[in-house]
Amino acid sequence: MAIAVGVCILVTVVAWWGGSRLLTVGRWQVRFPRVALAAWHAALGIGVLAVAASIAAAVTATLSAQHTPNAAVGIAHTVAGWCALGALGAALVIIGVRSDEIVGAGSRTFGNVLALPHTSERLDRRTILLTCRSDEPFACAIPGRDAAVVVSTGLRAILTPAQLRAVVAHERAHLRGRHYLALQLAELDRACLPSSLAGKQLLRATTLLVELIADDDAARRAGAVHLANALVHVARHTQDVTLELRAERLTDREWSPARKLTRADAIFQA
Image (cartoon, rainbow, N blue to C red):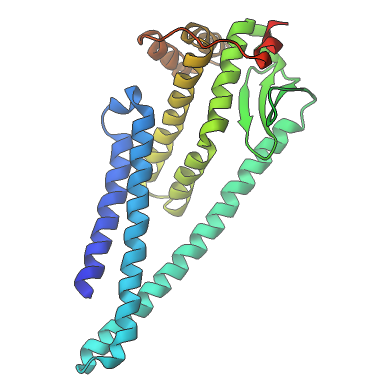
């Protein structure tokens, strides 16, 4: 039984270490961001299953310890089982506390955005478009039962209707892909291991990957040239060089023509 527990723990370490390395080593992730993120989630799932298996094995050993003829072996199994349960309880407490902190911080950020004076328009049955009064050019997606895409008046002022439509398509891609969950997982990993360099690298990599995935989706739906130009315009106003790099990535690839405009896209033609 001890061998089974040891193997499960080894699988957990390899899966989680290997998953983080997938996102932080090399440059292939930039070309295949969706594959990279899916691979990390698969590694994370394997690690969780291995943890559950190791705990189940330890508990089984504890329950069978009373039937073991060798008293020393029985005591060792009992101690191992209770240690495993104690470690699981401590981990759940830490994860629960950190999760509340992360969710609370996200809610406060969204609250600050929604506190700005704004107007609203409905994009579709489940998504609204909020235009906030602010000179700072920004856009974001707010998940929830009635999800929202937020753009600022400062952003509208520097973009053409086609470019604005591409930015909104980018934010809607975040909502469709539930990218906020991937970011929360990465933030939880960093929060539980605050001194770990790997946790910080994983959060940076995840943040970049979800942006690239949304870029690709928006490029197919609204046109790569419009999104690239929008990124360049925003980069010039915010001095964010990563936006220029993302725009360059879009221009270096071949794209099929943008999809046919929907009724909601008529909002950006006004």
